Image 1 (cartoon, rainbow, N blue to C red):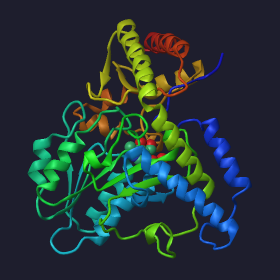
Image 2: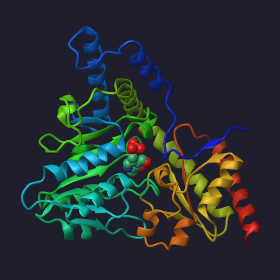
Image 3: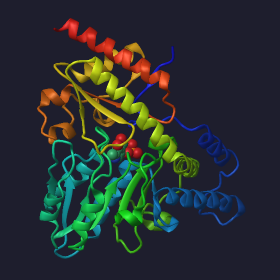
Image 4: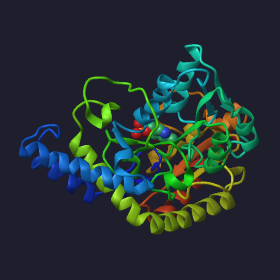
Length: 381
Ligand code: PLP
């Protein structure tokens, strides 16, 4: 029996069409895109094509895309880049308590350096309250950074409304769309954000590529110096095969988004209904406004990590939250910010489904979760 992969928010398998596109870049177009000879220009054309594909997924212009090594670097470039370019009184930063570490840690670093940073609270579903955002949108603030969708719960944030509140005071808005891209439609023009990060490996592309959308006219200080690539915002020879794969992955995500989201939402809803009906003492975290693929479930009186390990042995890969935090035992800061006790937050498991999840896997996953919980509850009644 095949293992069921239900950890698509951690990473996704490489799409075969992406692999084929990358192979071509690896084998044929190995040139340096900055070289003026034909081999270099062939690689340049691949990067240009990928830039247009990546821009197409979020409704941006190709020139507004800066390639990075992934979501973490894109988030860092947005937060530290705005901070580095900020002048005069407008130096403060505002973010939310439920952001990924890729935003929280650079914000904490800026705070250590003496900068004013506000961490907006969230309600019980993990959503930032607009009134709180409005209350801190002042002429002292340089940037609001609020994610589109949370990685642990899938909760969608009211980013368009936050942009509205921020714009009233001329504040720039960055959104971390690493989890949202490819799962819900994104149009940076409609959303009104100035900066938006996303990542290749979350949408069936290779690891080692990501992008920051930088609206025309927005000034950033680079994190790395040393060349003219990526408008000097991210100098260094481009990772052409990964960028080509990312471009292809964006094209596929755009073409498949509606159908994939509908199908995955049906599977996820069926999974949740079955788990809640068959296992007493279960609850879904994150409210109604969620990504179509994510199900974060609390299992009363159990340890989420124990469930995760048991499920792994039974043949289903899930997680207790962000993969980059899984080594430490602290409960999810997202669930804690939502008002849950540490014990309650520790009882939760994240199931995230995707493009390759089947009906049969969902039914089997429900049975395995029922078995794992039964075993654990019998072991510690
Ligand atoms: N932001 C969010 C919301 C994420 O879920 C992740 C990865 O899990 C990241 C940022 C970091 O992205 P990457 O793994 O591409 O560095």
